[in-house]
Image (cartoon, rainbow, N blue to C red; front, side, top):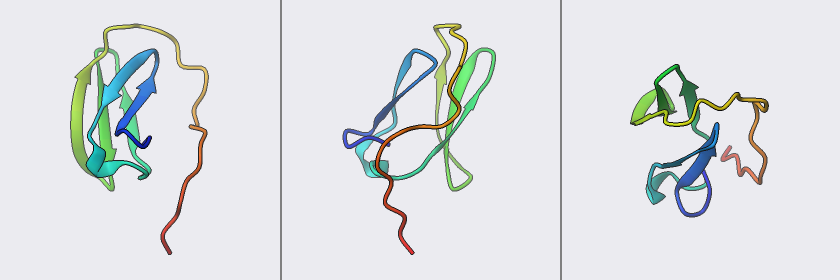
Length: 67
């Protein structure tokens, strides 16, 4: 997640919240919706308004892994 708690998937901006900023989340891309998961817990469900093809399967950016 970015520092403001949002991300962009398949042309759709998804706001999850600042509580999860800096964390690694999983986005499940379906025909009609986007589901955002964190450690197996469902955070949010968003309608998929743009049917853009997904070309990139990994996010870029700095990730801090807590060990």
